[in-house]
Length: 459
Image (cartoon, rainbow, N blue to C red; front, side, top):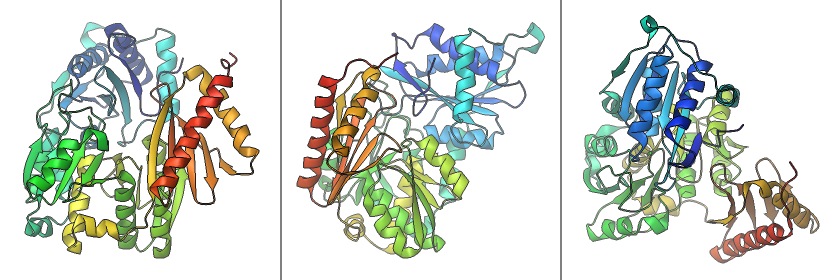
């Protein structure tokens, strides 16, 4: 029984994600670890998150574990607190950028990284067997609250950047919290960096009334309008659990995540005098283009921050991240971190003296198009097999590290099953938008054609 996807468990509340299900998973977690060092529990702003958090904490305590509840915090803030509170495990109730009807469970190891797959498998086995952990009355664990998690996390980020240089620039920033978990941390951080901050959707609401929680261009039209209307220097937006940050420049132009990834990869390799950057197969060719002349190298992984962070740890990488705005700063912590990304961009602009659009203009020009097509989970393997056979017949170079990446002379397309939804995601990149859109549409057409031809996968 597989419960964990690319980034934890994610299900629809009231369907599979019910109180008995959460309790069963909590029991599996309680069974998979020994009482001793505490377990940190935190959650995002979804309507079900506090209740799920209390179910998790109570079940762990009934299993003899000491629990520290840090409450509503961004995912990276919980990860940061796991290490600072000397916990053996962290549990985050979050569905990140998914629609409001979803929620999920994410497990963090004592080093602050997502737990490896073998730990997830132990939890899944305990859940499948209906196992939990029960202790006598005199060994019940305590549950205590820690109200300093946000302050601890913001202090950590502030120590990573040149606060004086940022403050001298007197940036005006429009911050779109997206009604999510960044509300208790990012506005405070930006003000401590000396910015004038105007917030949009700056109150927590798990129904996401401002816009859906994924910070795509289509969801950020208010931010794009507000930045130039107020004469702000830039806009910043987070997803629901604030492990990502995306930007809008002073003119109101949405900055694709791959451009921020490329900009900061170049900067951190330059500062280190070389080094390794780790990024998934979905990353832009521009990352290689900018780091190789500086003595850097790029290592590609499967998609998903758990894979990226552990590869970064193994290779002592200087920087890493994904093209969706989820960037990782190993000098701070090995976690996708939206607030640290915001601070790092401000730090770059302050120390370089550049404006955001000027800095981005120095990068190689590529266009990345992202699409998706519905595909039942039990048919997607067969669909990709059929597409692979189709593209192999025309002599294209194919990479199967994660999904199917097809290289053309003037670009590439990647077809990859979603780890959380019944979708195949289609990425395509080229040096013109028209060619990238053509490649993306070609990928969509190939998936749809294969889906018509594919029967259910064999059991």
